[in-house]
Image (cartoon, rainbow, N blue to C red; front, side, top):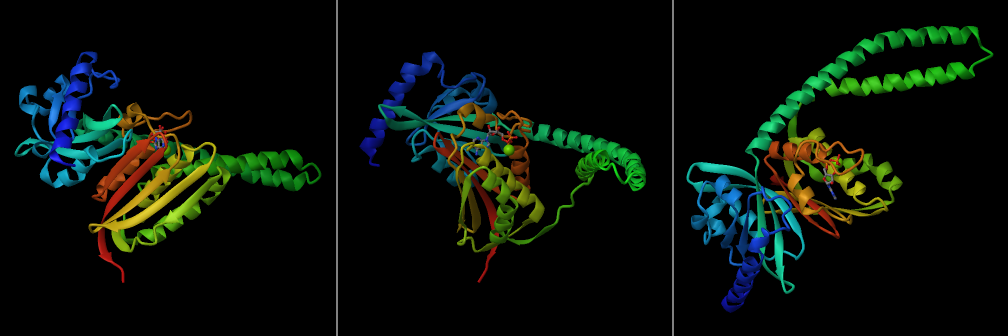
Length: 360
Ligand code: ADP
Ligand code: MG
């Protein structure tokens, strides 16, 4: 893009902001979200009040600042590409770090979406979320979950003993009344069901041991897809595997990473109630493994994307609202990163994990 073109687009954005500033950018449903507007050259041209508070810097100082002065340099390469040159009407969500002054780093979750003027992308809204607080919430949540798990397991244990006794006497009775088995069979199968539920509850309390080891992501993804085969078949989902080029080893916990991909693929399936394609893509880029789970669902609106990592946030009737949060947590522990790209044609979840070495 040449200089004149950039100037023209920047001018259009200024007009857009002037026209819309009184409406308080009603496209943002909550005024309380800190946000700024950035132009094609990467310069901030509008900052709202809440954003001033978050960044502890006056609007006058912030406006005209470049993205490169705002985000910490090591994050910038990743970050910058998200604001500019992206397809229209696409929402993006990722975590980043802002540093206004040396030593003062704020962890933020960023959601961006393009500003269109006469059908041209002239800039981006950038909604920030301070996630230091959310991190604290997560800590609390995992403590709560642990407590609930212990309790459930304790109860399960208590119920299991009498159930075992009941089952034993039932079998004695069945031996005595050989002729009339139907009722006995019903009782027996129901008892078996109770036992199965109890077993699951007891798993809850077991602190799963985390074991880091060298992993081949291709094998891991294959195992995950095998696990999910019945679900994909049942939901009329075609899985397209495209990760043969993922020729890297990573270090991680197999079960935890499996859980991550199960969560994302489950969400992809649930996003397409009438069936469709799920593409699992894997490539090696810049000494990192990039795995993408792409669906053809109807995507997420801004309001959902902003809240996606909140505990218990769900838009589903029977959802738990924990899948995205737990996955995020696990990837963070693996020193990885998650980028979400969503529009009305579908969603792409990109997981980036540091690679160990190239297999030969
Ligand atoms: P749950 O699946 O139990 O609702 P998650 O934490 O896995 O909880 O997801 C939270 C919300 O994020 C979902 O309710 C849904 O609105 C949204 N979401 C996640 N993945 C997708 C996707 N692939 N397509 C559309 N929406 C999604
Ligand atoms: Mg889910």
